[in-house]
Length: 109
Image (cartoon, rainbow, N blue to C red; front, side, top):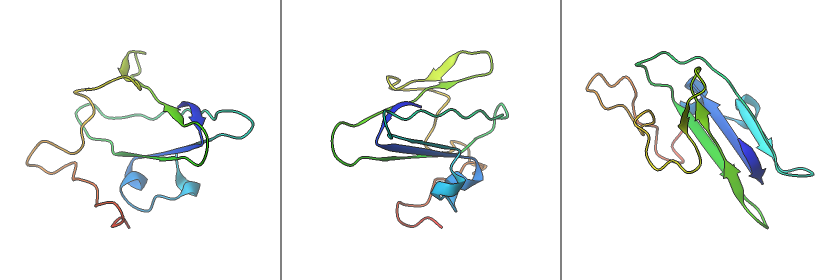
Protein backbone atom coordinates (compact mmCIF):
# COMPACT_ATOMS: atom_id res chain seq x y z
CA UNK A 1 0.00 0.00 0.00
CA UNK A 2 1.27 3.45 -0.81
CA UNK A 3 0.12 7.02 -0.41
CA UNK A 4 -2.50 6.26 2.25
CA UNK A 5 -4.51 9.29 3.37
CA UNK A 6 -5.96 8.86 6.08
CA UNK A 7 -5.91 5.19 7.19
CA UNK A 8 -5.93 1.76 5.57
CA UNK A 9 -5.73 -1.65 7.23
CA UNK A 10 -5.54 -5.11 5.70
CA UNK A 11 -6.12 -8.53 7.25
CA UNK A 12 -5.04 -11.67 5.41
CA UNK A 13 -6.09 -15.18 6.36
CA UNK A 14 -8.46 -16.25 9.14
CA UNK A 15 -8.47 -12.84 10.88
CA UNK A 16 -9.96 -11.37 7.70
CA UNK A 17 -13.10 -13.43 8.22
CA UNK A 18 -13.67 -12.87 11.92
CA UNK A 19 -12.00 -11.34 14.93
CA UNK A 20 -10.35 -8.53 12.98
CA UNK A 21 -9.10 -5.61 15.05
CA UNK A 22 -6.56 -2.87 14.50
CA UNK A 23 -4.06 -4.72 16.69
CA UNK A 24 -4.12 -7.91 14.56
CA UNK A 25 -4.09 -6.24 11.13
CA UNK A 26 -1.31 -7.42 8.82
CA UNK A 27 -0.85 -3.87 7.52
CA UNK A 28 -1.74 -0.58 9.18
CA UNK A 29 -0.81 2.48 7.13
CA UNK A 30 -1.80 5.91 8.36
CA UNK A 31 -1.19 9.49 7.34
CA UNK A 32 1.01 11.07 10.01
CA UNK A 33 3.44 13.71 8.75
CA UNK A 34 2.76 12.46 5.22
CA UNK A 35 0.99 9.63 3.38
CA UNK A 36 1.32 6.20 4.99
CA UNK A 37 2.80 3.10 3.39
CA UNK A 38 2.82 -0.58 4.26
CA UNK A 39 4.02 -3.91 2.91
CA UNK A 40 3.14 -7.45 3.88
CA UNK A 41 4.33 -10.72 2.36
CA UNK A 42 2.72 -14.12 2.82
CA UNK A 43 2.78 -17.54 1.22
CA UNK A 44 -0.37 -18.70 -0.52
CA UNK A 45 -1.04 -22.19 -1.83
CA UNK A 46 -1.80 -22.41 -5.54
CA UNK A 47 -5.39 -23.43 -6.15
CA UNK A 48 -6.55 -22.38 -2.68
CA UNK A 49 -8.41 -19.31 -1.47
CA UNK A 50 -6.83 -16.75 0.87
CA UNK A 51 -9.33 -14.32 2.38
CA UNK A 52 -8.40 -10.67 2.83
CA UNK A 53 -10.25 -7.67 4.19
CA UNK A 54 -9.46 -4.01 3.55
CA UNK A 55 -10.76 -1.16 5.67
CA UNK A 56 -10.11 2.38 4.47
CA UNK A 57 -10.87 5.33 6.72
CA UNK A 58 -11.13 8.94 5.64
CA UNK A 59 -11.66 12.11 7.67
CA UNK A 60 -11.18 15.56 6.18
CA UNK A 61 -9.13 16.65 3.17
CA UNK A 62 -8.00 14.52 0.28
CA UNK A 63 -8.41 10.77 0.12
CA UNK A 64 -6.17 8.22 -1.54
CA UNK A 65 -5.23 4.59 -1.16
CA UNK A 66 -3.14 2.66 -3.69
CA UNK A 67 -2.46 -1.06 -3.51
CA UNK A 68 -0.82 -3.73 -5.62
CA UNK A 69 -0.52 -7.50 -5.38
CA UNK A 70 2.44 -9.32 -6.90
CA UNK A 71 3.29 -12.99 -7.10
CA UNK A 72 6.64 -14.53 -6.06
CA UNK A 73 7.97 -14.17 -9.61
CA UNK A 74 7.38 -10.42 -9.38
CA UNK A 75 4.45 -10.36 -11.81
CA UNK A 76 1.66 -7.96 -10.86
CA UNK A 77 -1.66 -9.67 -10.15
CA UNK A 78 -3.62 -6.49 -9.34
CA UNK A 79 -3.08 -2.74 -8.95
CA UNK A 80 -5.24 0.26 -8.13
CA UNK A 81 -6.18 0.45 -11.82
CA UNK A 82 -7.10 -3.24 -12.24
CA UNK A 83 -10.77 -3.61 -13.14
CA UNK A 84 -10.78 -7.41 -13.28
CA UNK A 85 -8.44 -10.19 -12.17
CA UNK A 86 -9.22 -13.88 -12.53
CA UNK A 87 -7.03 -14.41 -9.45
CA UNK A 88 -9.17 -12.27 -7.12
CA UNK A 89 -12.75 -13.34 -6.41
CA UNK A 90 -15.44 -12.23 -3.99
CA UNK A 91 -16.17 -15.80 -2.85
CA UNK A 92 -15.47 -19.36 -3.93
CA UNK A 93 -16.92 -20.59 -7.19
CA UNK A 94 -17.06 -24.31 -6.43
CA UNK A 95 -19.70 -26.34 -4.65
CA UNK A 96 -17.03 -27.49 -2.19
CA UNK A 97 -17.64 -24.19 -0.34
CA UNK A 98 -13.95 -23.91 0.47
CA UNK A 99 -14.18 -20.11 0.32
CA UNK A 100 -17.47 -19.07 1.89
CA UNK A 101 -18.72 -15.51 1.54
CA UNK A 102 -17.87 -13.12 4.36
CA UNK A 103 -20.57 -12.29 6.89
CA UNK A 104 -22.67 -9.24 6.02
CA UNK A 105 -21.20 -5.88 7.11
CA UNK A 106 -21.97 -5.38 10.79
CA UNK A 107 -22.59 -9.10 11.36
CA UNK A 108 -18.94 -10.11 11.68
CA UNK A 109 -17.69 -11.79 14.84
